[in-house]
Length: 316
Image (cartoon, rainbow, N blue to C red; front, side, top):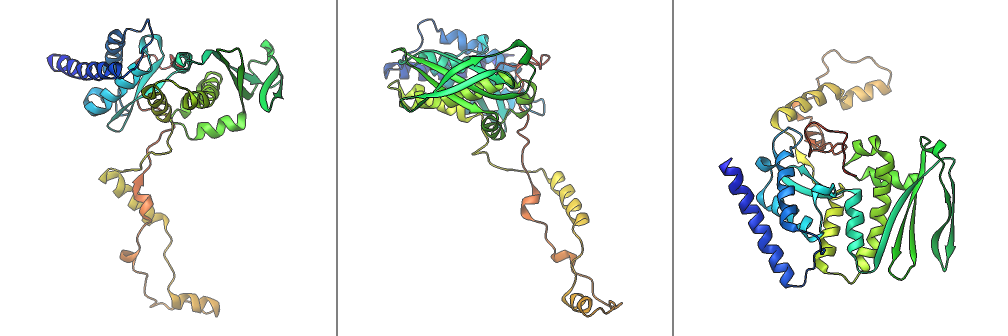
């Protein structure tokens, strides 16, 4: 326990020091946001977080990645106590990811945003889009309780600016599925499709506002970095363990058919029977494809678990 307390103190002290420097540079945090309490809540959450092999995050993750995740959380004004964010282990890195609620809270921090919402459109709902001054608008949306269990055909997000204008982002189910293919939360999307569809369309709508706002660059960078943590675009392929490589090599050798020699090919073309003394192909020179010796991590499921016994309580 003493070592854990020292680790907590070292990490939180490092984050507190950096937050103080950023505040001196102009970083503004939400008025009612107590980042010291948020850091304590986050640390307790990280203590319960494990990787796919059930090893504690505090043992497998680098101190730098833990500190960076906590710093990004504070800069965005988030706290796991309100299920606005959670922590996922990828390899030896701890990464922060925002929930559905967290993205809403972050966008409301932007100086030109007053409100944000998202809705899912089911088959059978009345939904019509239009255009005003070349911008997509939602002209009609009338959901029905009877359609709640129908298939999802799309989703939309509305962001109301401080001047009263509402900016809409509309996505079809095909567009949502394309985004999900690049995501690390595939299992969750299948289990909670409605909330994850809302989260996806909100993330897309947020890009324009975040990257064109006049708010602090540290906030913008933290938001973008956290969003990018959800996708596999830049993920490296990790080398498999030696035992796994050996098994793969054995499978490959069994599954690859023996190559015919040039002489056998010529005899087949002439419809002649094979010679009994035909030399066998040299299997030692046959090399399996290099790519087969590497294991691509399965990111269709999340590695980190924030709660040990409550898998269904997923923070959207």
